[in-house]
Length: 208
Image (cartoon, rainbow, N blue to C red):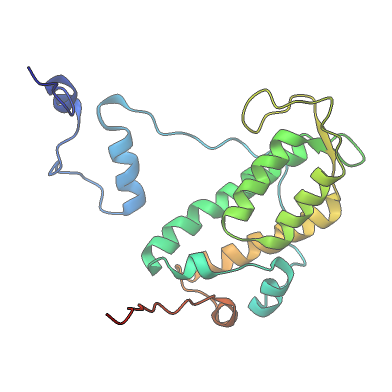
């Protein structure tokens, strides 16, 4: 007999119906309602022990793009609604992970490899190139010989020398730029337009 593929009937019975009459209409509230359906749990964010202050950060979008060296191409490929929802989450993520890095600080300038690696992954994923380069510079100054990777992205006990002031300055600028786009409900600021990399799609056919 053939092998059955797909979900079992018991598994299917435990899943919410596609046409379930959800109470929430807001996308974020709906996501939480679905996640907590039938006793599920919604992950809570950690309490930030180190707050990122945005005092003194430029408010001009052109200046923020210059400082952060953000490549907005990925963001430009999202719909405005998707971009807005994505950036709302990202705004919290970057502050959370910044706090994790700074909580690991051993004065004057050593931070754990694990937290800094997590931060770099987050920032380079959206092409915040300036602060990602600062994290990379810390890695370049670190001797990893005594700290082999025991799991992906984990080197327990490994510390990296970080330019804390520059790191904080550029993280604040990146956060301010994300905040600006969130407050505009996903609209990209004017300074983004000239920095979007557009690839013209062409199709070439060889003559028969």
